[in-house]
Image (cartoon, rainbow, N blue to C red; front, top):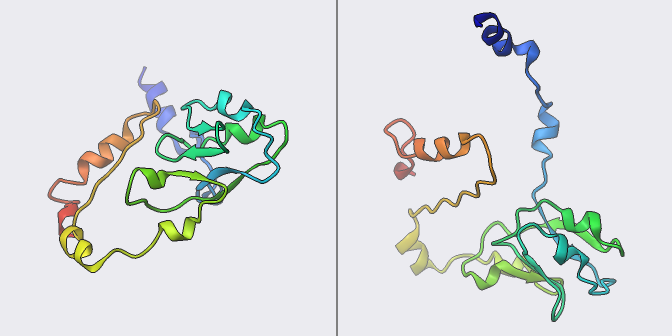
Length: 151
């Protein structure tokens, strides 16, 4: 029994990815180009139902898990990966379409807002069936060693 445990802990038996693969992970959002026919195949295959095509192609980044399944099933091949905004100030700003100006979403904060909420932190975790390591890391952020309140 212990031989199996020790052999699994050995570095040569671990499945690892090169640093380049990990660092080049997807950080973009799906976006349909002007050639979208509005067929709805992407919306039907979206696991979180983040895409709507009723009155133009739109994606809700609050629901999207950035899996890019929509791009793989698009019969027209018009869904591409574009840089996603780093933050949004309102829930409505998370619903984007092809004519949304992403740079305008990332406008600087008003000085009065920065003064009031400058040291506030809100962490959002999307757990899609993981090993719970991310949840443990978030819980550790508030202990005495990794005190996030000091930032």
